[in-house]
Length: 429
Image (cartoon, rainbow, N blue to C red; front, side, top):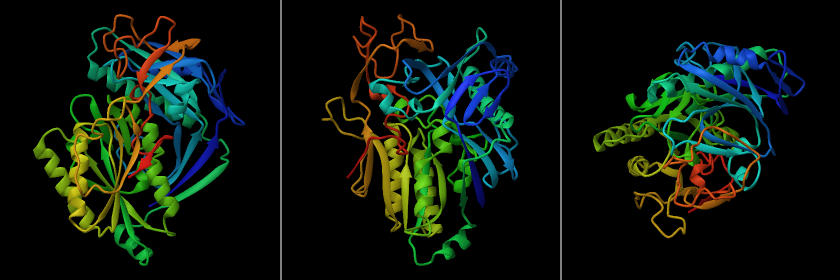
């Protein structure tokens, strides 16, 4: 399966009379966007802002971040099963508007929503302080349940991202990158002298409002399965969860998964990248056993020599990670794990809630309990009430200072310890 990403550079984002791209400036018609959003009758009010790198702006209650894209050749539609048909994606040509995002904001569960600072020390912890962001702050109609509000916000973000792409479909790309994975048996024979490497991609699926979608199906309903890497790049996986902000995989992270990109970079040179096993993260022991058994079986069946395993969030998911690691290692397949750590603010506690001697190759993406003092910002977008007991992730008494500074653990910042390695922190052991 071959996918070409045509990358259109976006250096600036402004409001204007028409949604279009002019050079490297993305122009947005605010009224058009509001009209498209309000097609969903569950949304009562919409506030639109544009925020740019270096501005004194703080975003609260961030739900998702999506990169505008549009398919220009090939079958399927972006974000299949959610706002597009369920036809397979991952081949043809897709246009990508790099340097721009759509950010959705909505207060649903409070403590799990994240922060993006566009400047100051907090900006160094999130990739979205470096992008031009169209922020959609959508308030629901009265008495709308959390699930319905969450679904409405998810659809809004995906819909507007694709709408922008469609309006700018004729833009001239500055770069074209081709990615290809052959059917598995052919791929294994393509570079017989190189080690066959796979990627075990764990999707968050642990309970209510902890959802990730694969072709529109809640991942908690799937058995582990094989998928082409290019399908991920084309929107087959969409975020839909309320987890700790620092290790949340937004839809942007899925579309731009750096593990997949790095494996492709080494493909045909150091390794033979043979594809991805998608699996879920479970609540019950029985479900954890089932999924890890199936994942290990597939890795053996596909004759991988080694796999990289990534997860999303912490705590309960550590058990899924260790089960996958142990069972795959027992098949004679080497594993490398990516995870962040929660060892307390002083780093003296156990980093993970589970461990195994076979987990002897681990990449840490940082200590999410590390604290940071965020300075006041000139502008704050998103709702946070002074009466909230659970203002942001990791809140503790005295976190909101009288001078408008905020002291938080970095787990409150979107992407700070992202477990795909989409950050600046990390170490190996």
